Image (cartoon, rainbow, N blue to C red; front, side, top):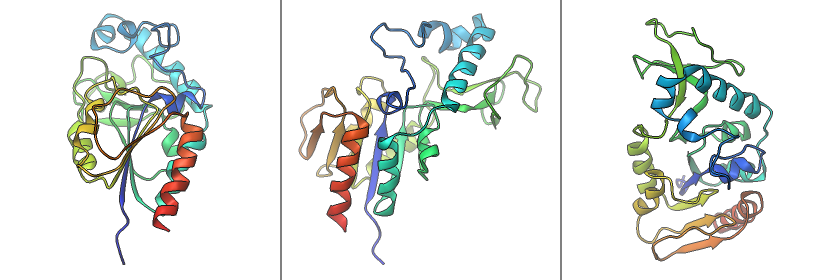
Amino acid sequence: MQSRPKLVALSGAGISAESGLKTFRDSNGLWENYRIEDVATPEAWRKDPDLVLNFYNLRRQQALGAEPNAGHLALKRLEDYYDVTIITQNVDNLHEKAGSSNVLHLHGELFKSRSTVDPELIYDIEGWELKKGDRCEKGSQLRPHIVWFGEAVPMMETAVEITEEADVFIVVGTSLVVYPAAGLVDYVRPGVPVYVVDPNVPELRARKNLTFIAEPATKGLTHLAEQLINAVR
């Protein structure tokens, strides 16, 4: 049996925004009326952990009510024809809700917490609330399992390895300005087709086999999935 082509999709906030989840790169520079520096940095956690915990509790409440859109479902459908891995910059679980099997979260996961003394200790959050006094098995306060601004991206090396194996590479819902994730495109092998789905076409260094689809994820990914499926049927 012939192995299926490897398809890798890099997803960003734009695909979640179509399910009603606001992004931190909205035009006013705020994330749900919070300054990023106040809720998404190690300094913010040290200064006011209650504010940070409350911020992510609100994000979880919002995400619990969000449903995957046609873009998420198109990526799931591609699994019937391709070996699909999604590398996402998003912390929500919409790809998983859509049924995608292989999702790598570069910036952490909203519905997980981790120890403040041992980053290997990671726990699922039941419901939406993480409280002051919730502790790991070593007695340390739990924090959101989120990669904050100023922190290393521990899954980046794995993401690079996955990207280097891609036979098809899709970029969806990201402006490609947040590094190191934006640099993944540079690891796509020469000759591999790259599709960029976004209403606002990001700037990319010229490369062959690059196709821009200036549409939102719900529309652009639906059409692209049909095209890619027909190519291997």
